[in-house]
Amino acid sequence: DQQVKQNSPSLSVQEGRISILNCDYTNSMFDYFLWYKKYPAEGPTFLISISSIKDKNEDGRFTVFLNKSAKHLSLHIVPSQPGDSAVYFCAASYYGNKLVFGAGTILRVKS
Amino acid sequence: DAGVIQSPRHEVTEMGQEVTLRCKPISGHNSLFWYRQTMMRGLELLIYFNNNVPIDDSGMPEDRFSAKMPNASFSTLKIQPSEPRDSAVYFCASSFSTSLGGYTFGSGTRLTVV
Image (cartoon, rainbow over the protein chains, first blue to last red):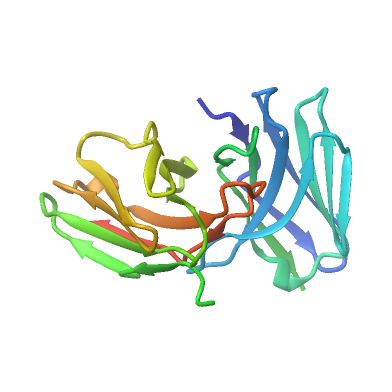
Protein backbone atom coordinates (compact mmCIF):
# COMPACT_ATOMS: atom_id res chain seq x y z
CA ASP A 1 0.00 0.00 0.00
CA GLN A 2 1.81 3.07 -1.28
CA GLN A 3 0.69 6.00 0.84
CA VAL A 4 2.91 8.43 -1.07
CA LYS A 5 2.88 8.21 -4.85
CA GLN A 6 5.04 9.83 -7.47
CA ASN A 7 3.43 8.75 -10.70
CA SER A 8 6.01 10.19 -13.06
CA PRO A 9 9.16 8.05 -13.07
CA SER A 10 11.05 10.68 -15.03
CA LEU A 11 10.91 14.25 -16.30
CA SER A 12 13.06 16.05 -18.85
CA VAL A 13 13.25 19.86 -18.90
CA GLN A 14 15.27 22.42 -20.81
CA GLU A 15 17.69 24.55 -18.83
CA GLY A 16 16.09 27.81 -17.71
CA ARG A 17 12.55 26.48 -17.85
CA ILE A 18 10.33 25.42 -14.96
CA SER A 19 10.44 21.89 -13.56
CA ILE A 20 7.29 20.66 -11.84
CA LEU A 21 7.43 17.45 -9.86
CA ASN A 22 4.20 16.01 -8.50
CA CYS A 23 3.30 13.88 -5.53
CA ASP A 24 0.01 12.45 -4.25
CA TYR A 25 -0.74 10.96 -0.86
CA THR A 26 -3.57 8.91 0.56
CA ASN A 27 -3.23 9.27 4.33
CA SER A 28 -5.14 12.34 5.53
CA MET A 29 -3.25 12.21 8.83
CA PHE A 30 -0.02 13.34 7.21
CA ASP A 31 0.83 16.80 8.53
CA TYR A 32 4.34 17.40 7.27
CA PHE A 33 5.74 16.99 3.78
CA LEU A 34 9.28 17.08 2.48
CA TRP A 35 11.25 16.84 -0.72
CA TYR A 36 14.63 15.15 -0.86
CA LYS A 37 17.13 15.22 -3.69
CA LYS A 38 19.46 12.33 -4.49
CA TYR A 39 22.53 12.27 -6.71
CA PRO A 40 24.02 8.96 -7.92
CA ALA A 41 26.13 7.14 -5.33
CA GLU A 42 25.00 9.52 -2.58
CA GLY A 43 22.30 9.43 0.05
CA PRO A 44 19.17 11.61 -0.26
CA THR A 45 19.54 15.14 1.07
CA PHE A 46 16.80 17.36 2.43
CA LEU A 47 15.64 20.04 0.02
CA ILE A 48 12.49 21.77 1.26
CA SER A 49 9.49 21.06 3.48
CA ILE A 50 5.98 22.30 4.20
CA SER A 51 3.64 21.96 7.12
CA SER A 52 -0.01 21.10 6.55
CA ILE A 53 -1.03 24.49 7.96
CA LYS A 54 0.52 26.18 4.93
CA ASP A 55 -0.13 25.89 1.23
CA LYS A 56 3.15 27.25 -0.06
CA ASN A 57 6.77 27.40 1.01
CA GLU A 58 9.52 29.02 -0.98
CA ASP A 59 13.30 28.75 -0.77
CA GLY A 60 15.20 30.41 -3.56
CA ARG A 61 14.50 28.63 -6.82
CA PHE A 62 12.46 25.95 -5.06
CA THR A 63 8.79 26.26 -4.12
CA VAL A 64 6.56 23.57 -2.69
CA PHE A 65 2.79 23.82 -3.02
CA LEU A 66 0.34 21.81 -0.92
CA ASN A 67 -3.29 21.17 -1.84
CA LYS A 68 -4.77 19.35 1.14
CA SER A 69 -8.20 18.85 -0.34
CA ALA A 70 -6.67 17.08 -3.32
CA LYS A 71 -3.98 15.37 -1.20
CA HIS A 72 -1.44 16.65 -3.67
CA LEU A 73 1.83 18.50 -3.46
CA SER A 74 4.22 19.73 -6.07
CA LEU A 75 7.77 21.01 -6.25
CA HIS A 76 8.55 23.84 -8.65
CA ILE A 77 12.11 24.61 -9.68
CA VAL A 78 12.57 27.91 -11.48
CA PRO A 79 14.79 28.34 -13.38
CA SER A 80 15.98 24.77 -13.80
CA GLN A 81 19.73 24.21 -13.98
CA PRO A 82 21.75 21.21 -15.18
CA GLY A 83 22.95 20.69 -11.59
CA ASP A 84 19.34 20.04 -10.58
CA SER A 85 19.45 16.74 -12.48
CA ALA A 86 18.86 14.14 -9.78
CA VAL A 87 16.22 11.86 -8.31
CA TYR A 88 13.61 13.73 -6.27
CA PHE A 89 11.74 11.96 -3.49
CA CYS A 90 8.54 13.20 -1.93
CA ALA A 91 8.06 12.21 1.73
CA ALA A 92 5.36 12.64 4.38
CA SER A 93 4.96 12.10 8.10
CA TYR A 94 2.41 12.64 10.86
CA TYR A 95 2.91 13.73 14.44
CA GLY A 96 6.68 13.73 13.88
CA ASN A 97 6.55 10.03 13.11
CA LYS A 98 8.55 8.09 10.56
CA LEU A 99 8.90 9.43 7.03
CA VAL A 100 7.10 7.61 4.23
CA PHE A 101 8.73 8.12 0.85
CA GLY A 102 7.47 7.95 -2.69
CA ALA A 103 9.24 5.98 -5.42
CA GLY A 104 11.07 9.04 -6.76
CA THR A 105 11.15 11.01 -10.01
CA ILE A 106 14.29 11.29 -12.13
CA LEU A 107 14.73 14.87 -13.31
CA ARG A 108 16.99 15.60 -16.27
CA VAL A 109 17.75 19.20 -17.06
CA LYS A 110 19.14 19.58 -20.56
CA SER A 111 21.55 22.38 -21.39
CA ASP B 1 30.77 16.27 11.70
CA ALA B 2 31.40 13.37 9.33
CA GLY B 3 27.71 12.70 8.82
CA VAL B 4 26.10 9.28 8.84
CA ILE B 5 28.73 6.66 8.00
CA GLN B 6 27.80 3.39 6.37
CA SER B 7 30.01 0.43 5.57
CA PRO B 8 30.73 -1.24 3.31
CA ARG B 9 29.90 0.95 0.30
CA HIS B 10 29.56 -2.09 -1.91
CA GLU B 11 28.97 -5.72 -1.05
CA VAL B 12 28.80 -8.64 -3.45
CA THR B 13 27.93 -11.97 -1.93
CA GLU B 14 26.67 -15.36 -2.96
CA MET B 15 23.16 -16.50 -2.31
CA GLY B 16 22.84 -18.14 1.09
CA GLN B 17 25.64 -16.16 2.71
CA GLU B 18 25.20 -13.89 5.69
CA VAL B 19 25.50 -10.17 5.05
CA THR B 20 26.01 -7.47 7.70
CA LEU B 21 25.60 -3.80 6.95
CA ARG B 22 26.88 -1.23 9.42
CA CYS B 23 25.90 2.31 10.33
CA LYS B 24 27.29 5.04 12.57
CA PRO B 25 24.73 7.79 13.11
CA ILE B 26 25.48 11.44 13.73
CA SER B 27 26.55 12.03 17.31
CA GLY B 28 23.64 13.32 19.37
CA HIS B 29 20.94 12.02 17.04
CA ASN B 30 18.65 9.66 18.93
CA SER B 31 16.63 8.18 16.06
CA LEU B 32 18.04 5.80 13.47
CA PHE B 33 16.36 4.46 10.36
CA TRP B 34 17.17 1.71 7.86
CA TYR B 35 15.74 2.17 4.36
CA ARG B 36 16.02 0.07 1.22
CA GLN B 37 15.90 1.58 -2.25
CA THR B 38 14.71 -0.42 -5.24
CA MET B 39 13.59 0.69 -8.68
CA MET B 40 10.09 -0.63 -8.18
CA ARG B 41 9.33 0.56 -4.66
CA GLY B 42 11.60 3.54 -4.14
CA LEU B 43 12.68 4.13 -0.53
CA GLU B 44 11.10 1.64 1.86
CA LEU B 45 11.48 1.96 5.62
CA LEU B 46 12.65 -1.33 7.06
CA ILE B 47 13.02 -0.48 10.75
CA TYR B 48 13.65 2.45 13.02
CA PHE B 49 15.09 2.91 16.49
CA ASN B 50 14.52 5.61 19.06
CA ASN B 51 17.06 5.85 21.88
CA ASN B 52 18.49 2.49 20.73
CA VAL B 53 15.11 0.75 21.07
CA PRO B 54 13.38 -0.70 17.99
CA ILE B 55 10.10 1.17 17.58
CA ASP B 56 8.71 -0.11 14.28
CA ASP B 57 10.03 -3.10 12.36
CA SER B 58 6.91 -3.64 10.26
CA GLY B 59 8.88 -2.95 7.11
CA MET B 60 11.35 -5.79 7.62
CA PRO B 61 10.61 -8.13 4.72
CA GLU B 62 10.92 -11.42 6.56
CA ASP B 63 12.70 -13.25 9.32
CA ARG B 64 15.90 -13.37 7.30
CA PHE B 65 16.33 -9.69 8.14
CA SER B 66 17.35 -8.50 11.59
CA ALA B 67 18.65 -5.21 12.98
CA LYS B 68 20.34 -4.22 16.20
CA MET B 69 21.44 -1.02 17.86
CA PRO B 70 23.64 -1.98 20.82
CA ASN B 71 24.53 1.64 21.58
CA ALA B 72 23.84 5.17 20.41
CA SER B 73 26.72 5.18 17.93
CA PHE B 74 26.29 1.91 16.06
CA SER B 75 23.68 -0.16 14.29
CA THR B 76 23.73 -3.25 12.09
CA LEU B 77 21.35 -4.72 9.55
CA LYS B 78 21.87 -8.42 8.96
CA ILE B 79 20.49 -10.65 6.23
CA GLN B 80 20.83 -14.38 6.77
CA PRO B 81 20.59 -16.18 4.43
CA SER B 82 20.80 -13.66 1.61
CA GLU B 83 18.85 -14.08 -1.65
CA PRO B 84 19.20 -12.42 -5.07
CA ARG B 85 15.99 -10.44 -4.48
CA ASP B 86 17.68 -8.70 -1.57
CA SER B 87 19.91 -6.88 -4.04
CA ALA B 88 19.32 -3.15 -3.51
CA VAL B 89 20.86 -0.05 -2.00
CA TYR B 90 20.43 0.08 1.76
CA PHE B 91 20.46 3.47 3.46
CA CYS B 92 20.86 4.37 7.07
CA ALA B 93 19.58 7.74 8.32
CA SER B 94 19.57 9.49 11.69
CA SER B 95 17.76 12.43 13.25
CA PHE B 96 16.65 14.02 16.49
CA SER B 97 13.38 12.38 17.45
CA THR B 98 11.73 15.75 17.82
CA SER B 99 12.88 16.89 14.40
CA LEU B 100 10.13 17.32 11.88
CA GLY B 101 11.55 14.91 9.36
CA GLY B 102 15.05 16.30 9.17
CA TYR B 103 16.78 13.04 8.44
CA THR B 104 20.44 12.85 7.47
CA PHE B 105 21.19 9.91 5.22
CA GLY B 106 24.39 7.99 4.76
CA SER B 107 25.78 7.26 1.31
CA GLY B 108 24.29 3.80 1.29
CA THR B 109 25.50 0.24 0.80
CA ARG B 110 24.93 -1.28 -2.60
CA LEU B 111 24.26 -4.96 -2.04
CA THR B 112 24.43 -7.49 -4.85
CA VAL B 113 23.51 -11.09 -4.14
CA VAL B 114 24.48 -13.47 -6.94
